[in-house]
Length: 387
Ligand code: PLP
Image (cartoon, helix red, strand yellow):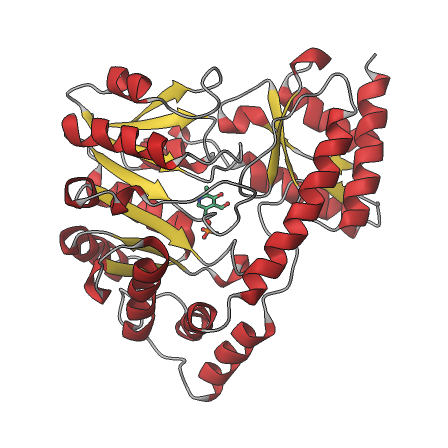
């Protein structure tokens, strides 16, 4: 069978592959400590589940509008006003099957053959693949020497007449960096001056620590607001990864285009799941804070343990729930490191090569404290064995 060429151009998700391998080992009864998952280990809060159950009982089981339940679109617009100081109406929002789907649909709606999309590396591994699936060209800008943040100068240099879009992700997966308000302002200035568009992936905005502050680039005035698309979702803040509810916010023009794509592909997001999402936004946010507090504790312990291993270095992340660990002193590639770690110590981590940084591995601390302690013991043992 001859597959379409576009399939050959994309790489399967290494994250999902390693997480699946660790799960399969667990199913065989092997004790595995997994730092691979990109999802909180907590259950979805009870009140959110109750709202979805109620929706089911009330017969919210039919097709809905492709762009989402009107009540959810309005609730998201309200959230963007309250949290992010953004003036969107319901018609500026489309509900999607997770943040991944909103980004994918956006690429399909915007990108044509020859269009360049600037992606700062390290990046969330799906960005370049989505650009390729949309027939565009990812332009990777290495930020290893600039604190994992693209600078205005780097952005300016990377822009060509073919540049259409910049992908901004703060807080970042995998590095955990959060751009400061003045850094965001400086990026916005280049975006406006050079007349490109920006998609701001804000899915980790609620998982932020210490002095770090999240601001949405779209909130910095009309000129940048008109060029920005916001992608987000409920997966990380509310531990709703399996629910598949995300959203895209932007001009009515782009939302209409994405609605058309969605209308002929996935149609609406699971109707009763959307009622859970409404409850997530309209109920107390204490659950978000409780999870954040747990991440703060885990971050402290994991960072402390990592910094005790001389061959490894890791900066303190300001957001999300990942440690991005430099392994260059071990002499292994990130794939070798992760494969050997899983095989010899049954600890799962994600190779940095998947994020465009082969001298790093990503460890998720969205897991319980005992697993962090035990997994770190084993990581320590593994690195010692390389000496
Ligand atoms: N963006 C980033 C940076 C992510 O890390 C993820 C998930 O890992 C997503 C988007 C997509 O999230 P979801 O599709 O589960 O809402």
